[in-house]
Image (cartoon, rainbow, N blue to C red; front, side, top):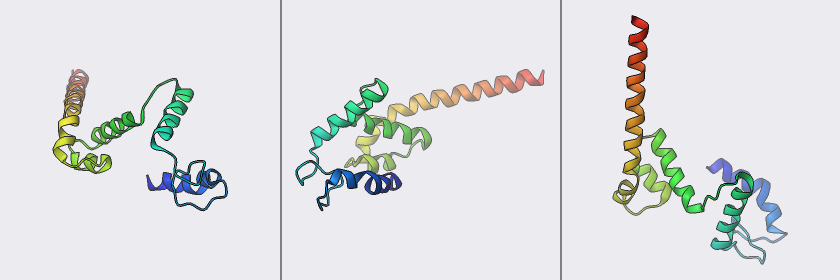
Length: 122
């Protein structure tokens, strides 16, 4: 993520600054930061224009958690830190159901591999 932010800060942010010298990561039009609601709306509109899908910024948070847990099952503390939840219990309560899906996928893969190896053996 650091690399993406550095690329943005180096390649894109200077043109958004319009000659000002403010410290905002996401500068607005009047030497101030971009407002949360307008920035969120711009992100949603851009994704929809590019993909045809309406994805909110909050949905990105859920997607990030799902991606992390798919690749690193059980690492709720990592997800808690990324999403800035106050307690890991909140994170687990919301995302624990994802592991049921992952467990089903893993079990299906085990059964398929077993059946494939048995069919090759005969």
